[in-house]
Image (cartoon, rainbow, N blue to C red; front, top):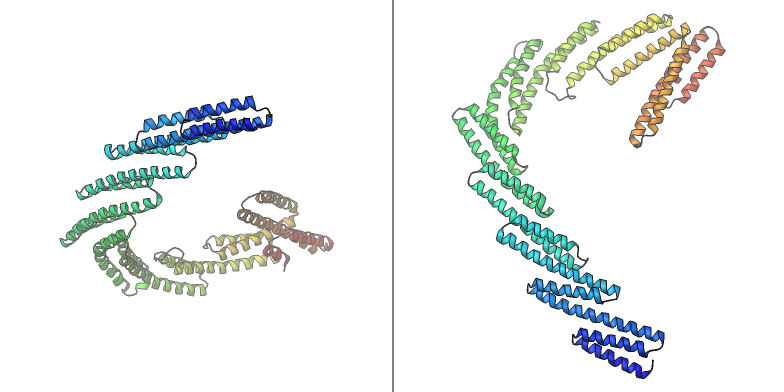
Length: 581
């Protein structure tokens, strides 16, 4: 570019900048436009022309940006003076300049976003002023909250800046203050009702305020205020209780015991409505101190009557006397149910329970000794009948379920007697087996199984039942082998295995690891049980052939039994089947 042309261009640009600095933005833009025309006419080199035009256009955009900045300053001043309409009008003017005149996309978008944010700030400020007025002057809290929530919605549309965080905090502070004012009014109403004696209405108001706190306050504030409300509610209940307890005490002094009981019961009912607290526990203790002595006084003569009965001559020998004594003592125990929970109540319950247990124990011991003598004389049925009488006494004892040692000992004694009887029956059955009288042996073993129906369920009884069932099955197998009818039984076992294998495949697909392992283990035990029965069938067939001197065929059956045994997984069952007498 020629020096003369450059000098002339710089003069035009300098004039434009001077006008811009004097806030004469329109004339400054005109000068920059003049510079553009000059470049188009005077500059021939395309690359130089492009650079200079781009520079001038940037200068024009910056001029509009400075003009927008001046308008924004003026608008913010108007906003500070609460002249919001004029401020918004100015912002709209700035917005039009940004939209219509700035041709740099990035600068235009930035200016538009910033101006829109400033307009939103004004709208929020207007709404905040309106909301505060509605709240503080009109006292319409719900409407104020609606306005403040509109402010929140507007603020959420702002760009993410510190200003957005600050204005959101301001709005939320106004919302929280509104909730606090609402809560204060509710609290005042409840307190006024409480002070005027309208206690039930006061409680309803406090309960309502608790719901209000749950839905309106921040977690930290919420927890504190809810504790306060619970304390206020408990104070009302406490005052009600004290009044009723005093009436109850007066009724006791006047000898109106039933009336006193009703009053103390009502006091306890009110205490049940209280929130868990030291005050609630204190009120319950005070009710107990006033009410429980009434019941203790009623219990004492009944307890003494029961204890006196235990001193009767030959008391332990009279079942009817023992049961009568327990019946008397149970009346005393029933009275304790009306007492308020306390250490004294527990003491009375223990005292009466011990008396019941001590009343039953001597009779149980005498019957137990007598039954053992009968067992020694092989009078098992008479012994069992005696033990059942002792059991009826043991069931009257007050021990918790599973903690009654006397009851468990007597049940075990019954089982022991029947177990001894079963051994005698099984011995007879095994002798018949030795004589090859299998059908008679089977009848005897079933007789033994029927005896187990009279026994109490225990692990030992369960083992005894399984042992007898095993003998029955082995005997049935002997009968089948003797009659040559083993194929049908073998087919049945194979079908059982097939069904169990299908169940095992399904169990393998269970996703929960613990449940899968448990289910698979259970099914494998069932499979081994069927294999065990297969082995018995094969061994019995082998034995039958061996008795007929067909040793080679017998060995084939024994080898088949060993192969089935190898298929088994449960060591207890597997090893048991490997050992034969």
